[in-house]
Image 1 (cartoon, one colour):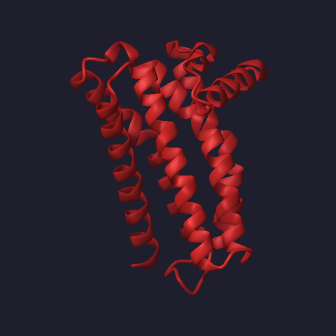
Image 2 (tube, helix red, strand yellow; image 1 turned 120 degrees about the vertical axis):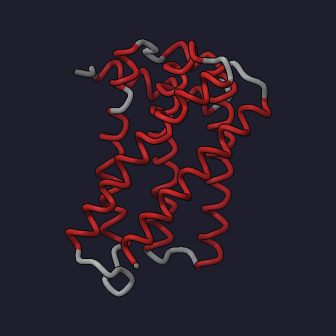
Length: 190
């Protein structure tokens, strides 16, 4: 079981990384146990993601009812949290950075808490109509760019790789996320 102290320390480590402070890495539990416990970040984010999904659910846009919609989104959420780490095992091996895999995924998972704390409110404001669609899209693009830079810094720091290799990991992560979301949308609307 994960302690509150480890949760807060890990989120603080993610915050320090977001500020460009590589010393934030020292705050993570980069052990095999810490690796598994870092997936608790998905539990912390899940309620907010569920609220967002409930707000954006539009029966006119999906061909399934709420139960199927929720089930598909749940499966997509789980795949989103597991596919990247599984693929990163091979990628770390290819980059000869296997020894840093655990600490990278631990930092990556806890950083997701901050990423969602930034991105979900922007999406909620857009769904709520507080921004005109062009303004909401522009704001979402700015937030996405900040998140991509953040993940780049984490990859570069945690894996101890050059900036270009870190950019490649960020690009791969983005493509994987777009693919998972595209398949999910296809299942919901097709």
